[in-house]
Length: 597
Ligand code: GTP
Image 1 (cartoon, helix red, strand yellow):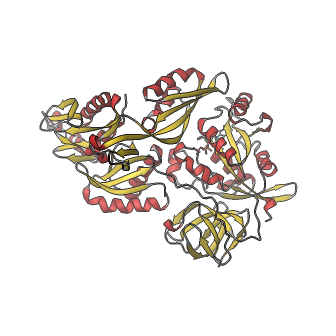
Image 2: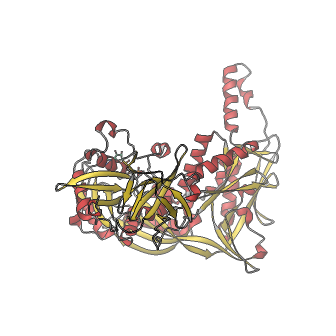
């Protein structure tokens, strides 16, 4: 089609505001899927996302919508709504000219919606504001439209109203996408220039590259070049997502789809790369993206040391479809051999662990997460560390720097005071407050990332009874008075339990940690000493008394089935134990360093 008959857009929405439901309605209303297939919900590719009820990223999809007798090709390119994956948002936006800003009519604007709407505006995307769930009795459309005006600066008169559930108003949204979002620019006759905005690995077909054609045409048989990767391939298939992959032979300027070119290794495809014709290449590559850097690290160890190779294979397989995840082998005195893994955030980490356990049937112990630190050493060297074990002697550190983020909360005004003191407790610096309405406000702080990743989100949810949301962006590394806090179990330092803390919090954290460990570690046949220390100085100490009786003793020997149950229970409980010296430490203990108050 001519570019004037194409529209490329994404949907910006907070989790649960109805993005998937609206996307499904688009498919249904445009006849892309039948009503019978509607419930199957084809867009959410990953089971795990299904189970958790959150969509990380949907596949792109091409639909056709008729408007004033003209058939338009609409391409929906998804943007993830969770803060961990915000880097993918700008990546999707580079392939679009517009975005539907979807807001739940009973919940209103949320922190990530605001952040992503700003990102869209910065990327020159045309915003189509839509209020969803207007069928709900709790919907308060007028108030929410006023909030949208205040928070994102849109004109209330432009806001469409729909129900993705009943289908009401959905046609109007499709019409508005055609009417308001500009047609893609681009010259069909220029040399091929296509943006690689995503890819996935298919074990039968090899690498599938998701592209948005900017100029020219791509077709089967063509020799193409990846401009950054400087590799050449011959195109074997070109197609569209409808929503499953359908070959169409060629894609031209403005269109979105996929191509395959016998690419065996996903590492050969860089997201953000420009794809061009080998014989008649374009001279300038597209701007590309920054590769997202993992912000949160933790150790991952097989419970059973001989599963190390199996774990390596499983990690390599996961990485095929998730380049933002990293892993390198490491060994720990207490834990044996494992991997240091880097994640975008805690949700990302949880998803990876679940995938590993589900797909690979490995029993894993994960150490507490930490952020990345930057050290300026006395010899002038700057070193990045992502593991507390790597912290050198205090004497060789000139400056210990930690990552700071600018965080914005969107919350009921009644909770401002509580969140302010929570952030102050966590070494945050107040920036400002802005009111969206008399009852809702945006609160901005600058705060160490380490104080955010543990449980700030949970705290926000409980203080605001679920009504508060947050979003943050990385600011840079800032020097702080930081120290490594070690834990000794039975006089042996458990390196996997070491954490980096601010000196002012070291004693409190140390004591809490030791108390928590005391609860988590079972009694042994001998007394187990627990100590927290900074260098050689012990700052907290507890003792786990020796065991007295066998756990089955209370069964009075009689009931064998009950005894079996108990044994089974013990065995199950043991699954996630790690032997450190003479002491067995359960998985939960490694997480106890997360408890902050
Ligand atoms: P993520 O997948 O987490 O990004 O959420 P989402 O934004 O895709 O939300 P989803 O489409 O899964 O919808 C969340 C919930 O809201 C589901 O239970 C939907 O059935 C419901 N829902 C979506 N749209 C409407 C609507 O217009 N009216 C009503 N009453 N419920 C809706």
